[in-house]
Length: 410
Ligand SMILES: Nc1ncnc2c1ncn2[C@@H]1O[C@H](COP(=O)(O)OP(=O)(O)OP(=O)(O)O)[C@@H](O)[C@H]1O
Ligand SMILES: [Mg+2]
Image (cartoon, rainbow, N blue to C red; front, side, top):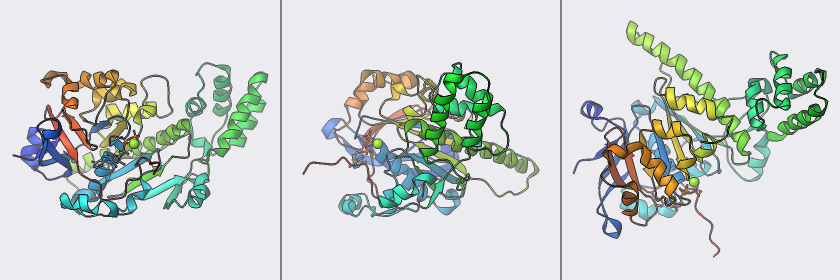
């Protein structure tokens, strides 16, 4: 039986074969406990993709994300130098990828693999450095932003305000009077200069004072992400959801702008047949993605994420979105995704949300495919819009340490 490459259409299949692919696991054939493993299932990394990883709690979403990250770092140099990644780590579980998973040596041996640590670049918000070091978390760098890098809309959204309420209007007016590199104190003093808004001024000043404790403001320190073969993990586990989302917005806007510029230069070089130092394509991994690209309500990262979902193919940005609740993910993400890896899911609205995409070539109801999975962690169905096929898979074991296991009482 032939190896399965997901995310690759027939034309690319003929042209590239298995070049530019990574290994996800093995094809599962048969149903339930009688299912057995056959050939490898590979994933295309040559083209940009939107991949959703869904499944209920504890069935392997974050683990599967880790497999893809490991595989990116195992690519041959020639391919690896054209790819880089940003991992938004909401639970603080990816920094352990630097350590080999010695405890799984036997399991890995069955797959002809060995425990292995990976060279990831871990960053934390600048103001949280001490907390992370005190907790014994190893990190390589920190990130910070100038308050002036936030737009008025960013502030409105991170404070969870409605655009038309007086607090937002006061904020927008005050910020529009500032230019250059300004601080939170500069915003506060502009607020106090505004006429009227007496009851709103104090509330807004308090919100801005509180923002100083988020740990994300400083001298604007952003480690380079678009570097050949580099995987940057941003640990936002100690940051509240709105601030996490703001961080994602600020960073992914930069990635998007840089990649759009780079793509223009690349196309020009192609036309003029000149050589060019390439800026790698970027894969952005987002765990708990429904909080960053929500179907209801706003989130500071929603706008740029929607933009990447719709326009990211051209500048070469891929998204890997893990979620327990695909139903709560913005419909743009569901509509534009070209692959789904779904571990066990039971809630009907979530199953139905996946159904919406690939109905045309599904022989049976999607819940039938999910029910056929053996009740083992790491098994999943894959819906591939590129080949218009559905597969069952057993994801391979992780070579590096996975920190997301549930604690047990004994
Ligand atoms: N492919 C696999 N092979 C072996 N074990 C696995 C595999 N996938 C997951 N597991 C096991 O399942 C556990 C839970 O997986 P994981 O942390 O990825 O869950 P999750 O779906 O991200 O859950 P949550 O929604 O709570 O974040 C892992 O700690 C690991 O022990
Ligand atoms: Mg998880």
